[in-house]
Image (cartoon, rainbow, N blue to C red; front, side, top):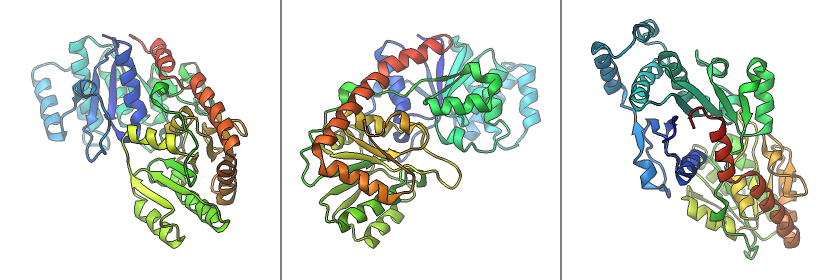
Length: 395
């Protein structure tokens, strides 16, 4: 067994399939680190999770049980004096549960002989890892993704403290690596880029036979995904007499607003919002598509996409991609080579790029083939997980 453990805020989660895939690939390679999850998934759409992986997850107790267990450990003399002092000093200040969760996980890690813990996102799990590092002879690292570094929330243990204390900081694009190294120059040598990965063998290749042409988008229905721009682009395509069908797969707080926009733009019958779908159904939809669209924007809080996994999935299926030039997206979508990039929020440019794809199947196939080859080179989960293991202490 690897001498490191995973700590997640919630595992497994539909919105973070890249985390599950990483753990599953490690299992395929014969590496089974313990998995801790602060929260249990709830109200999640059905997925194709491997029960053997789910059964390995240790879910932390709810608040009252957690406090009771830590008090019991303290009375039994299992906690060092500095841990008890830190709990007392922190009191009920915001984020106080992270300290108690650190005690719970840390005691388990000591029992298992684990000396390192890795979290995903510079968020709740990483902040818990920070305190594990303070309380126990256990180092921590984390993978930073998108909003957690582009628009970090204001916590006393913020991104600066996490970066300063972590043994390793992984991020998933060259763009994010440069940003972090410039901002935290003293920690630059501990910041490494490793792309997310996919099991590329699972994806059927698109055959471009859909009639009418099928436009597919996948993602949470939130502002930074830019789906309102895609709807405006669809309206422009309709006004130009283009035949098409558009499916926007996902769920989220903007669902009702997008449904109302579909009605306002007279797009009923052309644009569907089928909700979240399990991975095998998404793969089927990609194989049936003509073009994949990810119209990402920067949201009002500064949040934005970094390396949307769904773009990798579309490339694995051999689809051309139309997206926007923000975050790490240009590292995936190469202009006029694997797809087209437009400025965020430019619905007219988005419509023009989509129109090229649905009117020129030969071009769509050519760009899709180049995207498939790029995915093979950069986004193989087997290679990328090996790269991560080479960096993690104890792996």
